Image (cartoon, rainbow, N blue to C red):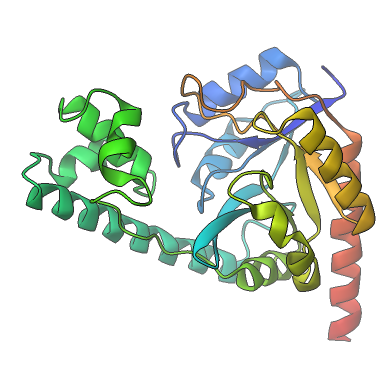
Length: 283
């Protein structure tokens, strides 16, 4: 595994179950060469994990998974190799967290109006330090025995067409790409075969997209090959990861996708090219 990497991992700072320390211990056991924490719209997990690294640990890559609007749906944009201390990025993410917390309150209110006994403090207890999201509402409902399971909460109440659903704040794709490029990073379309995101690739390339996530637990073999061919056609870097959340049956385990370290080398090369272009443009 020493030449393998995992560029798509989540902690309990967004919608994963594992703490940053628990995730680091799993990464160590898998003997990965490098990894990226890509929590949804927050750097909290990355920053905590960065402080836990010791000598001989795998390389930690700055990462994020940004929520983006896509017509009537959404797509997810993975970001890598940016400067996590860039002020505009920090401000944008803080604003995002505030709006997501408010969304959580609105979902709880809708559930209350339906006669379901749950309060916002229940959701906050589940979320901890993370920005509130639907997984936290689902878990709170399950703990309250208002639903039969975590998945049941989504099916009955908070799926995209559920009676307690509230649309979340999202970036426009161009906004997300520009934000990350200005912070010195690169952007990669996450799991393109989910929700038809693959159909947006050419449009996103025109906006500055740098890569596509090819290796993912939800991608079939023929879909993986199709994405590799698209990456070559549009001169995109291809990447991959387990999309680990720690929830049974959801995505893969840490290091489960055979992502070669060469993918990281190509990402770094693309980031250097972006940074060089920005320097020339500022002269």
